[in-house]
Length: 293
Ligand code: BGC
Image (cartoon, rainbow, N blue to C red; front, side, top):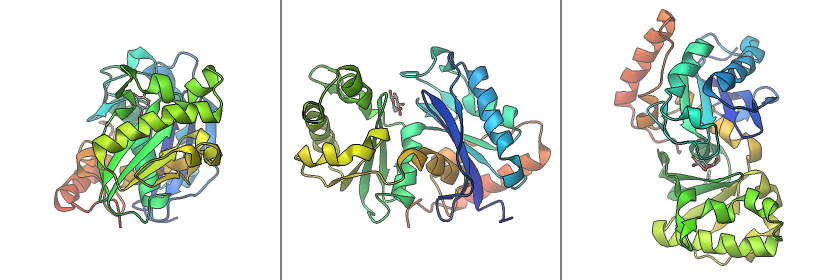
């Protein structure tokens, strides 16, 4: 089995399913097929933690004893604490989700915004792996997630899916779920995307925009309709981007965003793991290596 530094478990908490897989963070490849369990109908922290635990148990034999776990959630996560709940149960707000999960799993855990994780996955191993400047990764799904990554360093919790567009929340007009709900054609939806991405590029001036989320599978139906100054490309890791990015961030291989890793939580009841975390924290202060090449 490879050393603990190269393998981490990534788990993606979504609206309909919670999916996970062990990831080789040197290559970004899944080491086993994804395991998926439906998201509990009432997705409270305790109910979700039980599913996350079941996924970790499923892969117990594939994970080195001290392998870290990266978990995504569709919410702002500040130092492990969930701060918003646009598309998850409101009882998550102000819960230290990272602590809850590390106690449930008995392992070092990193809880991260879903778009941030997907962004890191795409930036490091996917559509943006050759772009070393400023990358904006967007996920079009139930909501709109946005990850900002400059020269390999993630600026977390950007929440730009909630920009005001025509005086209203942009994700309520341009998310993929709105296309479905309102029965919009790709051409009609593309008009809304045109307004949204124009707003994004005029505020941020990125070098590259990546479009992820399930609908990116049909990118050829809407991306060619957009007229933007910035190159815009579909994501390539599809529904594994979050799993891969969360695992990479949790493992910190071969370097990661110090802001996120310094707040990683270990379960209080596991002294060996605690030692590993203090070692890691020490390393963190000396490594400022960005996640990009
Ligand atoms: C949430 C973000 C999340 C995005 C995609 C938004 O509604 O506010 O935190 O990243 O949806 O799931």
